[in-house]
Image (cartoon, rainbow, N blue to C red; front, side, top):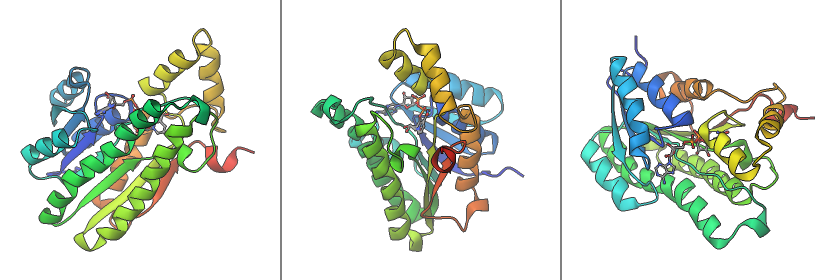
Length: 254
Ligand SMILES: NC(=O)c1ccc[n+]([C@@H]2O[C@H](COP(=O)([O-])OP(=O)(O)OC[C@H]3O[C@@H](n4cnc5c(N)ncnc54)[C@H](O)[C@@H]3O)[C@@H](O)[C@H]2O)c1
C-alpha cells in the first residue's frame, strides 16, 4: 500500500539535492508532488523522471522569498496535504564576514521563504481538515559551527518556528516537525566547497565527510526516507519535534 496515496505535496527547492530525493520518493509513494523552485528549468528533469516512473509531479517557477508568487501558486494548486519547506541557501562566514546583504539574502530565502509558504498553505490545510508540515533545519541550529553565522541563525529560526506552528495548529490536525541533517552530499555542499575553498576541493570534501563520526556525508535518499515517515500517517503521534539525522555529529563528536 502506497504511504502517500491521494496526497498532494508541495516541496520547495525540489529540483535539487534533498528536495529532489524527497520529491521522487513522495511521488513513488503515490503523492502528486508540486515542486516550487527558483530554477524551474533545473527541476524539470526531476518531474520527467517522476512521470516516466508512473508518478505525478509539476514544477512551478517560484522564488519562495516572494510572498505573492507563493500565494498565487498555492491558490492554483488548491488542496495541499503536505508541505516540505526545503528551499535554502548557504553563507559561509563569521559575524564580520556577514554583510547586511548576506544576512538579508539568507533570511529572505531560509526564513521568510518558509514563512511565505506556511502563510499560503496553513489556511488551505485548516480548511481541508489538517496536514503535515516538515521544515529543513540543520545541525547548525543547535551546534556552534565555524563560519556559519547567518546560516546557523536562519536554521535556529526554522527549528523554533516548527515548534510554534505545531502548538498553534494542533487543534486543526496539522502536524509540524523539522529535520536537522549534518552534511548531505548535494550540489549545495559541492557549491560552497568550490566557492569558498578553491583548489582545496578534495581535501575539504574529505574533511567535511570525516566531521560526521560515521565517516561520511548522508545521501539525499536517506533524508528523504525520514521525511517520508514524518509526513505519512505512520507519524500521526509525532508533532513539535526536531529529528537530527547526522551520523553521530551532535552526540558522538568527542
Ligand atoms: N546539504 C546539506 O549538507 C544540508 C545539511 C543541513 C541542512 N540542509 C538544508 O536542506 C535544504 C536543501 O539543501 P540541499 O543541499 O538539497 O540544497 P541544493 O542547493 O542542492 O538545492 C536547493 C534547491 O532550492 C532551490 N532554491 C534556492 N533558493 C530558492 C528560492 N529563493 N526559491 C525557490 N527555490 C530555491 C534551488 O534552486 C535548488 O533546487 C536547505 O534548506 C539546506 O539548508 C542541507
